[in-house]
Length: 274
Image (cartoon, rainbow, N blue to C red):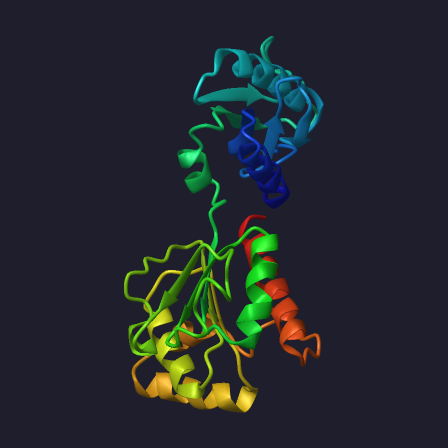
């Protein structure tokens, strides 16, 4: 649910529309929704998502509409869900819920984008046929895209006119020069050969990321994994790698492989925001 609400938020920001977001930040005892539940409320009171339904949600929605008027940046409201005192909401589940309500100014969304992990970037190492099919798909499903290759004829604006960035490196041993990854970075390794894949993979394991995927057969990947072990990488490091890359949909063409990769990346991203 949180993942879906995030994309409503992203659409609003792209259209310059302010909104109020409510998120459950803490709970005690039995509550209808746990920490991490989100709800977006527009100026007219319409909402997407839920913080639990019933009286809790109705009261939260009222506060959100008022917050849209006051433009209060952030405030935590504590709701008691039992009927033990006159201020409680008297919901059968009991328990307590703390809900943060925040006004989001679409003209200054930086903190919101960072906090809610809306700025996911896919670094595609290798600019060949698979990358050419994959890059527009990833943009379409809301990844920023950066394409990196050691050949200018494969990494250029004519080939990738709408990518967020296109880079040419001297050697894949230096592929991460000038790149700072985060927990919201997705690394796709589809270079033209085993040596390039391995050089990028070694560096990728030293950087933060949500996803590392490498193209290649199980036999090829097993050989590269053994090399990683010889160089001191742990089994925990190797477990971070999705290889062969992509969902197992019997993909063969570059376009089919691109769809399988995008599907796997969407799956990982959704799981992170559940």
